Each structure stands twice: as structure tokens, then as C-alpha cells.
Image (cartoon, rainbow, N blue to C red):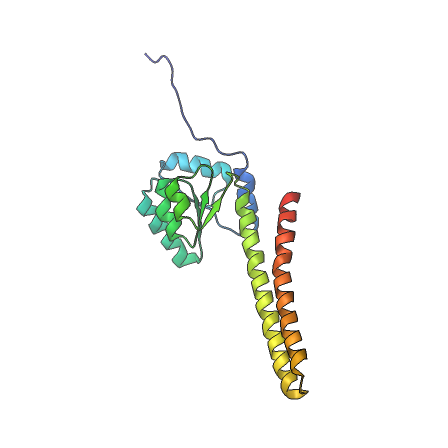
Length: 193
């Protein structure tokens, strides 16, 4: 005779669905790599809207799946916090460890550590990296343009050396300020969310 039954299950974080929806809006494909059994993984994936599920994986299996996705889809990011996630974090294009709950090996292996256990920092980090890349290209393009114009000015109109130096150093200040503006703007955007 059964007197009762005890069932244990991992709880889905309340913000997980919102974070996944935001990542989907940015055309990010979400793949779950887990050592849990397939039925549990499918149930959680259904709740959250996860695109693909790979369950019952050992750490080396996760590495194989990541390599497969990188070869077929390009850059990958992996988010993890445990010892079993460390090989995958090292293999992915970008390994993201959840800092507060993360094991030492996951934190050491990851490329990026989110110091809070806030999942909503993941889309923020992705958007911040896109903006940083954009600023780098703006600065490179602007610097090359200034150099080309200074060379043309030196040969075409015999630009005096002090004006050339002033133009070059002025462009350096503009490039630095363009980078610093992002330090002021990005935290303000984060506070508004």
C-alpha cells in the first residue's frame, strides 16, 4: 500500500520566459543542453519556448553539440553555472557564467561572468556587446577618414604641419569621447529597464 508520494522538481525562474522572449526578438536561437532526462527537459522547454532540446548529456556530449552548432550556425554562446558546464563554456564562442550560483570552475572558464543571478543581464550583455562593436567600427572608420584627409591635405593644399597635428590629435580626442559616451549612455539605459 502507498501512503504517499513525494515529487521533486526544479523550479523555472519567473523571469526566464521573458528573457527567452527578448532573445527570440533579437533572432537568437535558444538550445537547452542538459544532463536531465528527456521528458523533464521537454516539459521545461515547452514552458519557456526553447527552440531545441538535447537531454541526457554528459559534459563531453555538450561540447559535441556546441561544436555542431558552431559549424552549422556560426557563433554560439553558452550560459552555465556548474562543473558539468565548464567544458561547454570553454568550447562556445562566448561562455557566460552565472556568478552568484556558479562553481569556481565555471567562473574561471567563462569569458563573461554575470555577477548577479539575474537572467535579464544576458540580453543586456548581448546588446551592450553589439553597441561596443558598433562604436569600434565607427572609431576605426572615422580615424581612417581623418588620416586620408590629412594625407590629401598635406599633398594637395600643402597643409601646414601644426594644422595636421591639430587635426590628428583632435580626431583622437573625438574617438576617445565617442567611446566614453557609451559608458555614460549604457548604464542609463539599463536603469530605465
